[in-house]
Length: 425
Image (tube, rainbow, N blue to C red):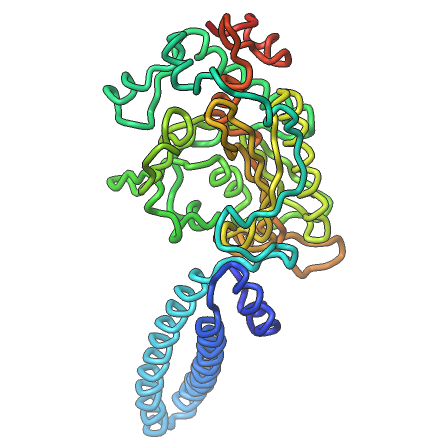
């Protein structure tokens, strides 16, 4: 969430930058500023009356002690009127503060100045990649859903029977292969200094609000109405919320956390060929990495996170590319995001497998996640970052399609010590 100070001190710049996200802030930002001025005036008026009330209360006690009963009673009558005025002002103040909050949560994060303008993913900016095999002839290659059926590795129809579309059943060697990928991703994270946690798979409203999923994306989350809890669409939510209402010492930076969780997404409105097989699921596994960082170092950290994800994909020897998201493709909460895409040979298309983002202080403001420098009592908001390292379904799809041969699906060499076998068949 943006602070009122950000909007007041950089009004025109904020409006201009939000336009890169195709968000017209020309009305809502001035409205927030005006409401805040009204709030300050109401607060001042309330404080003045409260001070008068306190002075009268003190005076009444002195009048009673002096035997000036009539004067004391007149002053008491005045306090009754003051109490009513104060109550009315505080009611108006509460209503105005609620209006102000409701407007603030509608304003997305300001994009970094380097974010390119654009409407959708077709306008994303290519950064770099490694895909020498992409141009080769792909005739005769099977898509992963046909490979899964041929070798009895994934049962999509059984998942429909048990739950519904988007909940596949992984069988035999593929079940072990899934565990191998998860362990590989976690080992890579721990070896790179991340602290592993196992968080809850359900979160409350405060957690959803803290990272920006609520009130923006409630329709994409599975909601248990009786308990008012949400299934996690990503480990980002519980892991980042570990630091909600926390004041850190600047010496604690960087804080690096990783977690594996199943993830649950309704994916409302998704249909067609792009959701076939493992391309888009309602339940999938993912290893997430989360950073809490000093504001002066967060973009240096973002670059390191991009390099970290890149080296994992390189170890799996998959063709990939990195793109910088344009304003129209950037999420509500992100200031800057790099997406990783791996090439699906049989489908002849790029599949997004990771997003690495810097949220700057946007989430931290919602979380009340602050820090102090030594010798300074004043707190400041930290910066938060996160990335998929990595999401499994499309990685599995890409491995299956890129590593297929006449005998089956060759297991990438880096995974063989985890699987105990060399081929999926």
